[in-house]
Length: 615
Image 1 (tube, rainbow, N blue to C red):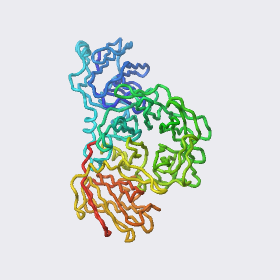
Image 2: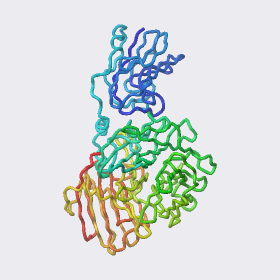
Image 3: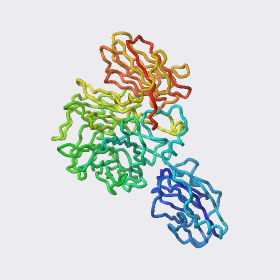
Image 4: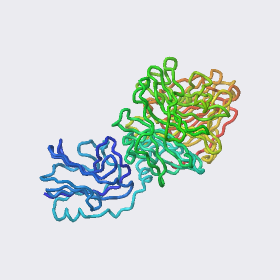
C-alpha cells in the first residue's frame, strides 16, 4: 500500500505548548494514529503508530518563520520517508498498513480543535494520495511558489477589530503579551522586549518579543529575540529578565530559563548578540541556591546592571515563613557570579500584602543619592483583599558594600488602580529613569480569545524624587501624540488626554466617564482626606481583577492645587494626581467611545485627541 500525506506550510510560531509535536495533517483513533507536523523545536516531523509499533521521524533543521515549505510523509509498505521540499529528511522501515481514519487539518487528531498542539501558521495544498505512481510523482515536488509571509502583518490580520484594544499603548501586533522588560538604549535606539506568545491570546510557549523606537512612543516590531524552540537552555519558556551593555557596548540579555525537566524549573541564563539577533548559552549561568530557607522552586526575573565597582544582579525569590526577597549577586565580568546574600526581605506578618515571594525585582537610581527598589508580590494562593501589584522602597544603595538601606521600613504601594504590575526600567542616555509596566486587561480567557489579544504595557513613566516621595510622570514624548484640542465642555473619543486643575480646599474633584450614556467610571480625589475613590458600575462583568467600587488611602494628593492628568485609550484609563499618585484601571467601551465630564468646579481644563501609535 502506497500513501502520500502532504501539505504546504508557512509557520508564524514553531513552539509546541506541551512538548508534543504540533499537527498539520493527522488521523487515527486510540493508540493508532498518524501525524505530519513539526516538533517542539520547529523541526518537521511525522509520527506513526498502529497500537503496537511506534515510529517518529524528525528532520535535522527547523523550519523558518514565514517561509513556505512542502512537508510530506511517504509510505510504500516497506519504508516511511519524511520529505521536505521533495527531499528525504528522515526515513525508517515500516512493513504493513498505516492506521486509518478521517483526516483532520491543522491539529493532531487526538486533540480538540484549538488545543495546544494545533499548528500556528498558514496551510495550503493539503492532500492525501493513494495512487502509487501519482504519490511518487507528487512526493518529489519542491517548495510551493508562494511569497514569504510578513509575520507581523499576519499577526495584525489575526487580531480582529475589538473596540477595547488600545491604540497608543505599547503592545504586540496580536495575541498574548505579559510584562515588557529589559529596556535598553543602544546608539540612540530604544529596544524593548516583552513576554509574548504568538500562538494565541493565552499563556504558553513564552518567548521574548522585540521592538525598537526612536521616541519611546512609536515602535517597530522585529522578529522575536529569543524563542524556546531555538534556545536549548529554555525549552519550555524564555521568561522575564533584563539587559545590559557589555564591556564592548554589546547588548547582553539575561533571562529566566524555563525547563520543566529540571527541579527547580527556573534558572538564569545569558544570550549574546549574533548577527541581527541573539544566541543563548546552552547551560544556565546561575542556578537556584540549595537553601532550605528559600521558597522551593521560586527563582526568577534577573535584573542586571553595571557600575564602576562591578556587575550586580538581583533575582526574585522568597524566604519561608518571612516573605519575598531579592537575592543579590556580584560579578567582575557578567559571567562568573558570586552570591552576596539578600538585598531585602519582606515581612509577611506585618505586611501580608507584599506576598511570600517577589517577582521582577528592580533597583533604579532616583535623585542624586537615592534608589527605588520595586517588586511584584507573588502568592501561591493570593489572600482575599490583599491586592498590591507593585510595592516599593526608597533608600540608599551602596555599591561598595553591596547594601540597600531603606529610608522607610514599610513598603509603599506604587499604583492605586489594581491593574499596574510587572515593573521594569532603565536609565536613558539623557539621565532620565524610566519605568515600564504591564497593564493586565482583567478579561476572561474566553474574552481574550474572542478579541485576539491579551494585555498591553502601561505608559512609560519617568521616576524622580521630591523630598521623601517618589515622583511619577508620564514621559514627555507622549505629547507628540496630541492632535486636535478638545472643547472642555465636550471631551470624548476613543483616545484622548485631559489635564484638570482644581482647588484642594474645595469639594473633592470628581471626574466621570460614560459609555452610551451609562456611567463607566467615576474617579473622586479627596485632598482633605487624602483618599482616592474609584467606581466602575458593572465592572465585575468584564474585569476579574478589580471590584466595582473601592477606596484607597492614604493617597498623596497635593495640599494646594489638585492636578489631574487623565489618559484614555479605548479600555485603558490612567490617571496621575500631582506628581506622586498613579491610578491604572480599565473600562468596557464595547458600546461606544467614552465621554468625560467634571462635576466639580475647576480652575483650568485642557484636553487633546491623541493619535494611535500603530503598534
